[in-house]
Length: 150
Ligand SMILES: [Cu+2]
Image (tube, rainbow, N blue to C red):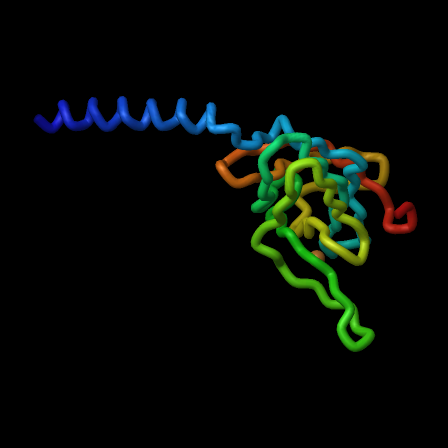
């Protein structure tokens, strides 16, 4: 009886996965990333990642995070200016509508790359995996640049 139930639910989950695949969701291959670069400050200070996202699909995509083997932690941040003081805070997610472009750029949204795991310098490349809702992942190669190059 127990094994019977197990088999049935597994079959049902399989059917659900197929249904989701055909439901017209936007997948990572519909997302185009260009101009990806990481600006590194000297010493232990975190790096900032910038890029352009284009949603070529016909459904919204939602960026929910990022990770990289080169850093302990990667967060989605947004900068703001309050009373002449620069602030930034973490954001949970960024939604990009179908056909829309979204720029991660200085003084706006950026990836905060915290806890460098190895020496990096301008001219190097670093891989970052962008994480979307539905557990979609997109691996992107970022060029390491000096802040002066932005
Ligand atoms: Cu930040």
